[in-house]
Length: 324
Image 1 (tube, rainbow, N blue to C red):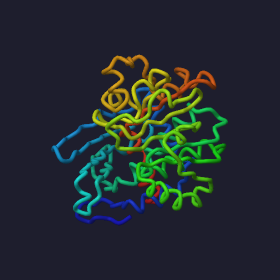
Image 2: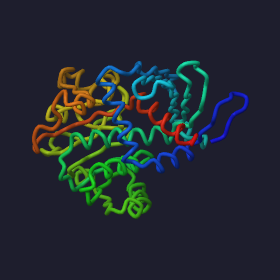
Image 3: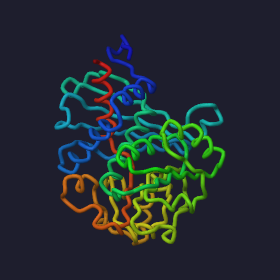
Image 4: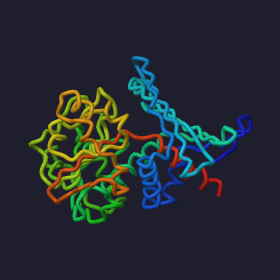
């Protein structure tokens, strides 16, 4: 962490954030993000909806947050962008930064690169949902999509479900799936099998992290007792699960205002397959306001869109630890 004299603020790089979160440890990190869901359910946070700017060839999302009960000293905003054509220029398709401010004076205290931040907090949110909603005897994890987010999903889920002894992965590019296996099998200390889509879906827990714009998982592929994490489809134009899957499931969400405009939930509401009253905030389950899984036969579905409080908690944790 170095100081930018002109701004009187610190710069924290992706690599520094990664090192810091790993030193904190997944178990502690997940428990801190969990507080955000609980405080969200209690109405103790100030988190407006994402602001989206679409340029036609790229987009920019602004995500401000203030969590006075968690830590009244800071507020902040994440600015994250997506530019698919950047690949042709040799640039990352996703760019972003977090601006962390002193909540009293609004003085900028840190600029944090946001690629690793987004990856870690998204994994943590899935971990929280999986711990709260999946069966405690789960043995297999299926991951569909083996890009940037996949290892963070795996690490978070293995943290909360150490009973898992095998990971099945599927990617449209089998080469990418094999690369994932070769890179992470030893690091995770678990058997990773590259299999078909159907075989991946024959798992106790399934997480999807793709950029699909057409559904590829249909109700007949889903069995009773499964827990599903829909992570990839975070906008109206993306979708991974056919809305019919939601009809078979108990549906849990990270944020109502965002989920109704995202992926399976948006399409489900549009087609009348889902009603708003079917959508259960994850924070309500954590605070025991409502039931999560009611039996071993339930199919539980968690819709993740990424909420600004997750980023602020991550920024605070990393900044405070880096100062030490």
